[in-house]
Length: 226
Image 1 (cartoon, rainbow, N blue to C red):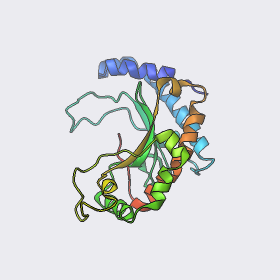
Image 2: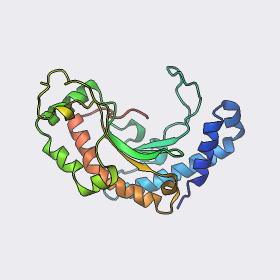
Image 3: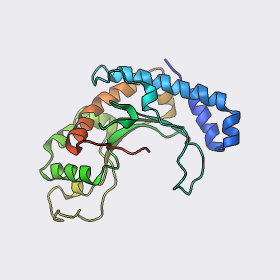
């Protein structure tokens, strides 16, 4: 089983030396760290495949590049101080809701849901919620979901969305512009011998919510890169 300690060590150093000169001088260390993460993600894929078939999916198709797109950002740091992957049919290009695995020192997580949905997808989600969304409430009340995720999170409007009265019985849910859930992972948990097995178990508890998002939101990417 992979120990991700060298990966976290590399990311800590990168965070303190986020420039091209340092990165090129430590490219061998980066290559080792990325290889560890790729193997880790592949093991998670194999585990998920037992309850959520992902035929032929390879970790390389799921992993994001470490280079940042700085064109529209005030932060011009060239590299991300994390490694991340989206696990779903089709990998990064999936139109399904995805298991998002993010590894960074002090900020690792398993997350997913309706993150940055399109205007059309958000409208469909709200239409479902407006009916009372009994399936959604049953899913997020399940013991496994509560144990690993606690509750749903996401950005919310301060006022009722257009087309819905402010006294709608589901108004607090209708205010959400994203519906996501997060399972935070400590550095020790990421590096533990049972890390893959734990993440797979969390994914299994997550699957009903992700299925609901995919079914309700409809086709198209449901998540933006974090």
